[in-house]
Image 1 (cartoon, rainbow, N blue to C red):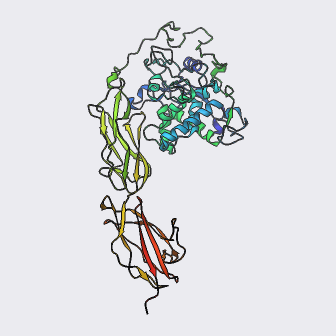
Image 2 (image 1 turned 90 degrees about the horizontal axis):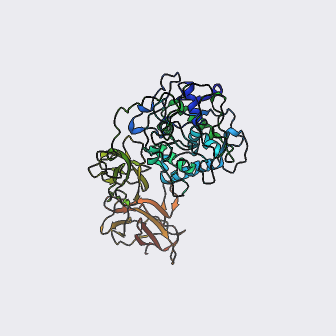
Image 3 (image 1 turned 60 degrees about the vertical axis):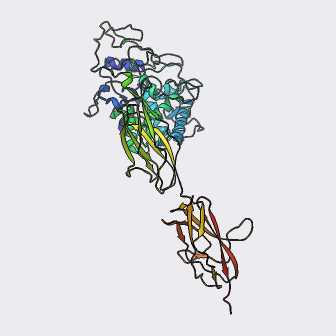
Length: 556
């Protein structure tokens, strides 16, 4: 890091003119979407068009521009939004922006805990993409005072992305532009957009909405972001560039070491190249691309509305292939009517998991590969002992997972259904495995159970558990020597068991009935106190039996 201190990072500007356009469009940081130039490493050159269509970047891989983190860490390590304003200005995160990142983390922790999204990753991407919403220039609701727009993605030095929103978000009805503090292209926002501040709108220019959408995007495909490999894949899915990954990683590590809150509008935006100024120095000032000072052909692409400042309009480059029809484009997945998923340990779930694939028109889409994956601490498996299966949707757009078989581990787990190889939100199902139960338990014989003081009971105690008249195998049973009275408690005298070390115990847990529903208790011993005592056995499910034990001296 020391060797890199003070160095600016720039990707995608292959000439000074192109760099000027990128800086004019958004000097703080550009959203992904452009042709990526080689940095001399030999392995980082890639264009947006080379990204597989089923794993396209969130924002189109346009250029970005940002500082590297400072060498000195903040004076007040930690994540509290109540920290005083200390440390370098560069290490601070504007209050509304920081709150949006943390709220997104909490929301996803509730809906997709297995992803383990850290807010510091959102902060790192927000820093690289927009300089934390241009230093926190947002209103009280978290919406930027003016739109943050990336360059026009018209294939002239940048990626070619035809208009997908009729200019609704980016003001351009010919080509797309990355939009907002997390720099989503409109077509990606249409799929991933979220309402993070609960105002009934999904606005890419709102930091709460954009942060939550970015969190869902990073968590796609059953990723666990606590794993370094999954985190790297998530960042590369956002922008396909190894240098971008290294830059985000450096800020991620920096923010994990500590940061502090600064007032909105006072965050640091990296200065642009060539001594230029921030294109939006004051709230409410829209970014306005300008031509270089010296007269020469302006590389700026066509502006929204049709006019062009280039005296020699570029020759349109037709797309290599026709875009797929809306009826053939996968837009998302949804639950196809799966009900509550509950089963007793060892049993099959009666409910089958069913998912539907939708096209861009909201209709069913056939022949979509769907992968169902069991996640969480469970030994439940699909039929055949598999934890993951891949199937294809039928003509009605639906596909049903194999029968889900509960194991012996009780509790909740999740099943995630994703479009195989696609960066689309997973459909997450919660399943519950309950303990085996019995509604009746009784002794298998009626022999009187007696012992002399200080001796052991000659006859063993055996019981059998049933559920709805059938054998109840593997049912948990608790055995306790109890006192008399309306509210029995564990007795401190009378008959007892011995633990593995030979110590006296009067309660046994972790007992289970066998395959035939029976349970043979360990040996029972009598102390020196004569009398009649009670042994209570209780099963999972609430079945109870009370057995009498008598301690008396043998008859003369």
